[in-house]
Length: 250
Image (cartoon, rainbow, N blue to C red; front, top):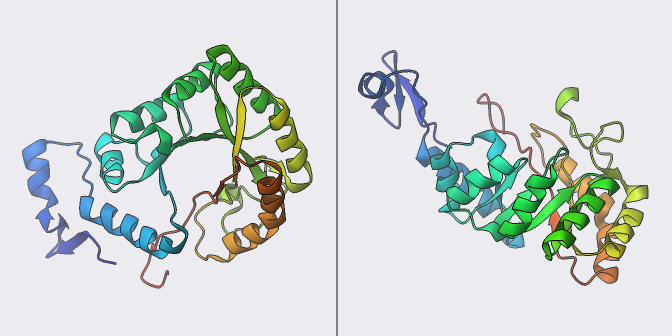
């Protein structure tokens, strides 16, 4: 991996352009992003996961700059948002609605209805009451809300305790014992379509092992869901992949 930000004779450069010159031209404060670095990272991830033909969704919360989102959209990426504002930014940047997923624990009815009108790929749902809320909104609009239940697989991602989100004691999602009953509730509620299972283990995760362990834990549930619900077609493994902060990191 090439580093697009380097020092030469004490001068910081972005893609070999002196940052001091950029500051003099555009003024400060100034945010400078490397498009080539963004593309290199995205293409490396896409190539590594090519055998499963993934939809890679950029987490808009990481950086909501329209040009950054548009860079990934130009590569065919989807987007993951945790608010109506983030969904709007993704749409304005050119992300197709059917490549957008809506996560987060605090979705308002206004945001849910906006997402439904746009026709997003699916909502990741944190609880049974949220299933009922999305169902009611979809019924009111005369449309269908596609959903992925967030399952907590109780896997230690071996990262900082404050950024771990997939262990049993973490507050996110429903545990495996409760998950199938929650999906059955979703099946009974009007105007919902069960499409996916979602998990998110935390960040930064510096090895693939936690993902493999979590997938092994949800495998039987996914096979049961596929058998029970013909519309079930996605497994969303979440984000959190680490980056090399120092040369010894992989």
